[in-house]
Length: 150
Image (cartoon, rainbow, N blue to C red; front, top):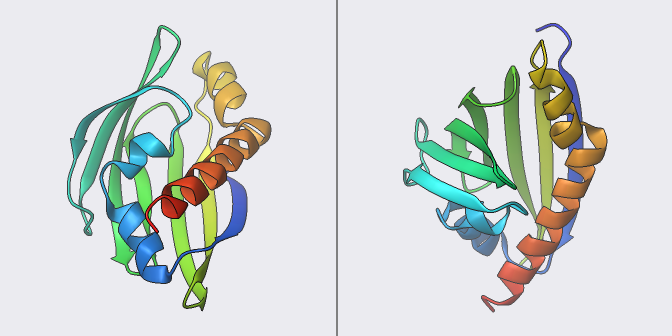
């Protein structure tokens, strides 16, 4: 695939692999992990082929997204944009047990911006800086959510 960019982010949490996997499989996690207000339209139970449909709100601007899940296991999954703002987006989440009370989370996104005027908008939100800010937020939200489940 031409002109695909890759973004990687990783961090550790003080939680078991099972707790991390359970958190990410919970349909409410999507709202927890988004720094923008979100309206969830559909969230199938996590499985290969399951679908999540939602709208993120950037002020008055709706960003509609539909993702399909694949490679679902206790060690992670991939969600691929079926429709949404990007020309291409595949987000792989991988979880690796460090010990019984700590898990390392690896995030990788392969993406391509659309052509035309939407490109400016997606580069602003989903360029390297925007993704760094988003995943720093997600790291903090994940750690907080898992700490509160202890």
